[in-house]
Length: 182
Ligand SMILES: C[S@@+](CC[C@H](N)C(=O)[O-])C[C@H]1O[C@@H](n2cnc3c(N)ncnc32)[C@H](O)[C@@H]1O
Image (cartoon, rainbow, N blue to C red; front, side, top):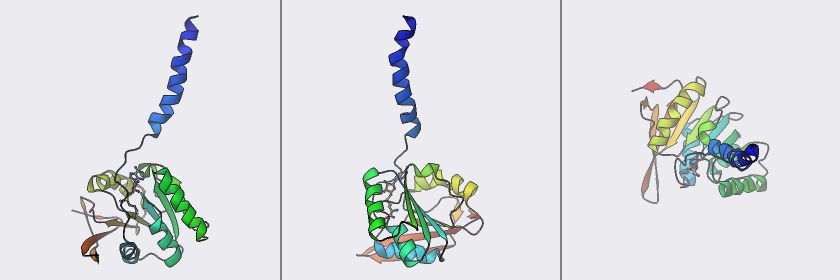
């Protein structure tokens, strides 16, 4: 009789615990980088054919698609939003890029970045603060981190570029691993 009382509690916990473990913080809203900015980010990162580009919070997948089509790179995106993941995957399939582009639905903070030669981000400064230790732990010497509009506090950029699109200036910060601190 006593055991029976625990059954609904155990059932609720079995449902709740994985849900809580999976909860991820939304680190930025979906605001796509204009195509000119996407291309400049990949240019200033000096993406070479066969390299691996990660876009953390990849939105509709536009950076991944440009990396694969125009720079002949492999590209991996991580995105929280299910509809955006679906949209990105459909576009990848339409363009026949499935062998070079992978989109993972999940929390970018959980990404394994060890294979990355280039990481692109368009998140907020506070999100970059959270990512910095992950970059420092996981990225290999010579990897590049390219951030649209938001600097990485505590690191000195190798280069800061600017692209003007429809009268609005977009900053691009490029960091080389291991980063210069400051
Ligand atoms: C400003 S948009 C940038 C989209 C794309 N990288 C670009 O430059 O066009 C930021 C994206 O990060 C995603 N995002 C926010 N927090 C996330 C998280 N914790 N894990 C994965 N994606 C996340 C949002 O859903 C959104 O699509």
